[in-house]
Image 1 (cartoon, rainbow, N blue to C red):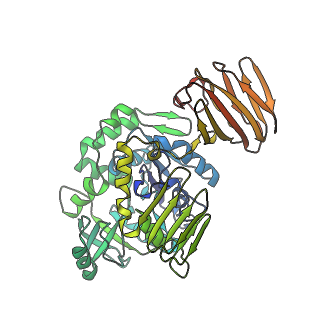
Image 2 (cartoon, one colour):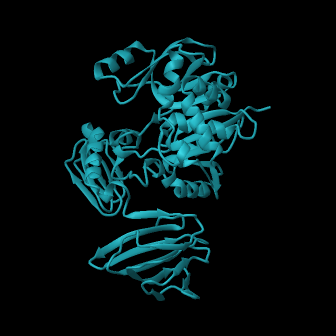
Image 3 (cartoon, rainbow, N blue to C red):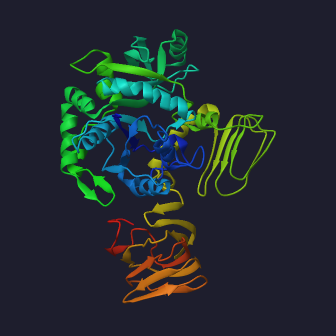
Length: 483
């Protein structure tokens, strides 16, 4: 009988060092940075074809703000999974504890494979081979982590020192976890040959993790257990109890358990580290993305509408307009609809300082793109001026906006693709391509797409106040209270 394996995908981070592509409301794991799949989708697919192991649908622990995008990305892949929503971030140890409680809900005790949703793996067969090596160790009760074979004295990663080999599988004993080193110590680690980069991926039985977190941080486990047991089901999502989870201490898997395990503290299960060489990157900054992507003969990476002349080792990404570069060397140029970033590759870690300044100034560019995703589709704020705003709105087939009203604005809708069903006050009618309708200020209304193709409209808002918080909801199929 095949051993059950449940992937646990952690998707709560914001990826601020990849601003301006990565934003608080649409972070890097939801972006297609490498190919057509987002990093999250690529993580879900990473175990496809591992037929000798009984891989179960994943448990996804996510920030509540990403819930509809994650559900939609799963739907587009024809995949299923349990999506657990955190009301606030509490780091990876509580997230894994919640996932372990969920995995044991049906009286099973599967092996959990814990994967961050924002990493890149270019050699999937090599990754799956390492999973096969770790599987019997985890099934036997060991706590397994995966260490990346270093190829440079990297100062941006933590390291794990390993001891002697455990068995013929190629796994090693764990001696210690060490913090991100300076350049000189990183070089010593590289030359020593028994230090691996800490990948942040783990493998263990659900019961083994719960036993370990109980020994190390019982307060954390009890808070997580209360949040899970007092939580609720909301359509496709499992919501944790907000009060209980907000009171949970925050800590990482490494600090909460793994470092104590390697130090021989408390009564903990044994640990093992499996070396992994599979083209791994945490894509933590723009220079890491440049190293991951295919390059031309001069080391340049181009995405979108980009023209280069006499450039070397330049990463240029355009989302909306032509980006032309002449004579650039080791630069990163990122263009989006509302922001442009230019940074030297040696300074990409400092993008977070710009992000901090944006936060201090409460600028909207830190939270969201001009294009905003909703459970029914998306909208793009095309233009705005005094007392008017223009949006391009796309509604997915079968989807509907909430039944709502605005106190300060009226709306004109022009259908440019598809057919809309409009509810206005006590009337309901269809609006076809090249037709329009008007929604007076203070009138209850709803927009629906009854067709099988996306509905696209241009919305012109006019009024004294055009903020997204001018909305009164009467009914919403997605259970939202906000816009």
